[in-house]
Image 1 (tube, rainbow, N blue to C red):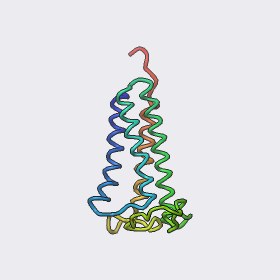
Image 2 (cartoon, one colour):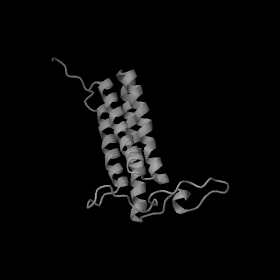
Image 3 (tube, one colour):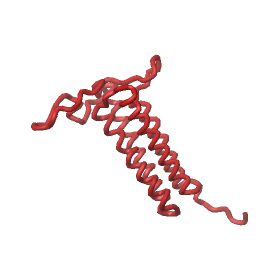
Length: 158
């Protein structure tokens, strides 16, 4: 696989994830909870790594794509953490989600829905945004990791 092409794919995937998040925030007027904001960081980092891979090419680009794949797998972990909070499997690790503020901290904007209540975008489809992000980030991470390190063997005699 052409590393520069794979870098462009990483940029497009990360941009699509961020576009979905910002579309829900600004288009549907859903104020994100703190865990939702955490879920955006892997996409931002992957956008940058994809750009660097696009510019670098070669072995360095492959390493950057592999790192981007690992970052997206970590993003799937964050989304899985959020989905677990929604299911009530564990409490949120963020004090803002639990209504606890640090002394002197500014009051946050009120999220459209608390961290422990799922947001469903499609009526009748019981899949929350955090669950959709988990699947998307997992697939992106596996795809980017595969593009970085899969099929690197060269054929001889052809």
